[in-house]
Length: 222
Ligand code: C5J
Image 1 (cartoon, rainbow, N blue to C red):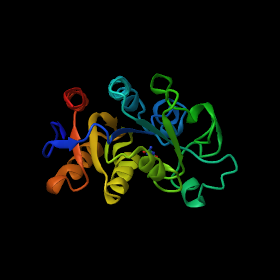
Image 2: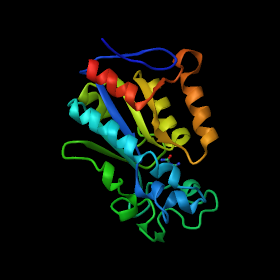
Image 3: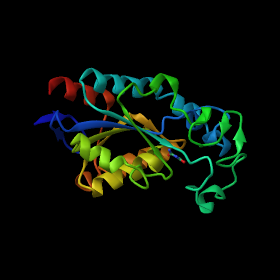
Image 4: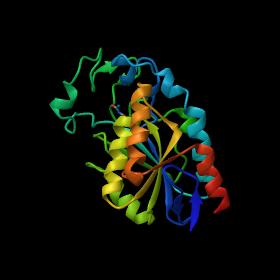
């Protein structure tokens, strides 16, 4: 067993069964004119973590370990977009509408793409998901089983929405989950802080947290 120095205590893993899951590092959440900005959010907070997410991805690639990317998006005919999701809130443009980067959060549109700096390389799994959690209505669970993954390191956005939802779903399915604290971000700093605290509370009730450097050091020592 190898270890990553983490909170609330060290995270143990087998080098053969660990994978990185990068949640929704899409232009729509990180760039002006996208879905995140349309809800009134400051997207510069998401842009700021890009170099750290890149470093984490490169560490997994260098170690020959799997990297899985998720994208929140919907079919062109909106058949997987419940009206309750489309009509929620008061965005300046709604999911499926034409925006400055194409149709908002629609599969294949420019704004839906993963940021160029973090783009998947050949062979990496990309999961398109219509919900906040990556297991709902996707092949994510089957892909994890095929990989034989048991421990998952998480990065991406936003901490308290898609990242936390997916971590909780994974935790309930028996995966041991660690969130890279500096490779995740929220539009609301206070929500990020509370989400990290919730995850590791009560003896890692949802999972562990560690910095990207701690994760990479654990991989190097494995
Ligand atoms: C949101 C996400 N916040 N990826 N999506 O709508 O967290």
